[in-house]
Length: 382
Picture 1 (cartoon, one colour):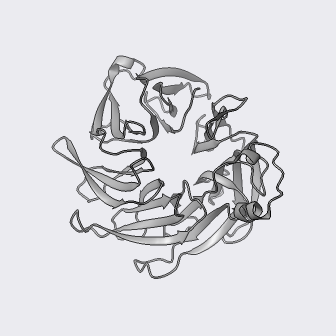
Picture 2 (tube, rainbow, N blue to C red):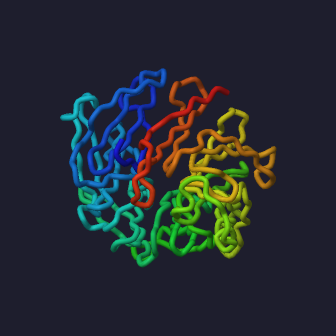
Picture 3 (cartoon, one colour):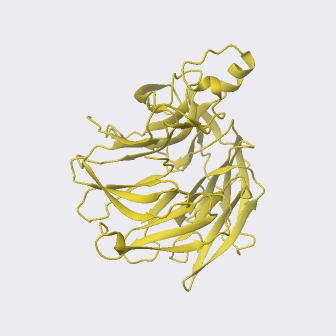
């Protein structure tokens, strides 16, 4: 693989097995057909050099009962969605439509949900650096899309996820701004387009990247799971020797944390931060019940070494009965440079959630490395 920054899973053939979707950025969009035993066959959806398709979401955006794939085109500054009619194995069955063509510079991430409770799916997206630096949502009416600004001039936006944090039946927006450290909930007031969102900064965090909304303590309220860290530097590629105490102090702030929802809609109440693991240069963190015990485990991807891990890779964390207490770490894959997006889905349909991940091993801050970019999955053996 050349460079891949977005993966997802969906059953495209209707055979009950989850397939995988991945992009080779600047080359094309592909899906990998799952035979049910975790063996995959590669099929072309779309090939167009010059596009920079990255993170995406799978949703039935046109209400036809079939999944569509909604993408960001980072360099093109666009949002677009792909649908198929017929056999998804046939490249000719796929076509794409623009949500926003070159009107969303540095498009980075996208999600879908019914934002205005009209029974239709809307989109929310983040755009970062190079003229982006904003959150917007996109409303569809009679086949055309309108972009509505949520906030602009907010640097390096990454996380964008819709969830009901106040239990009022309306979807709010979770966002992160890596450069200014903000973890944000935009409360959906349900008002007019102009006055729909109220911003609440939950915390200032060291370089937050990708987190998610999840009820980690099983109390019916959506909490926030988050990770992040500093950009990788030359001395962190492999086997770095920590000599500078100022660097050590900065890296000690790289963490996996979760924020406990205090309940209700009063955002003046603080969200208590609980540390799952520190000294971790994280890219994304997700939650899944990996052992079917009714409790959620945490899965995190690391870009590279930090104070308490030796390399990039995938790591699983399990608490000892209380998510506010101590968590134990298990290494799934280490020595995997620039591990980025991760999923937890049941690949082989045995009732256990597996782990899927991607790493851009051949590139580190624009410098070639002696490894291959890879899309892998790990079987959960129970």
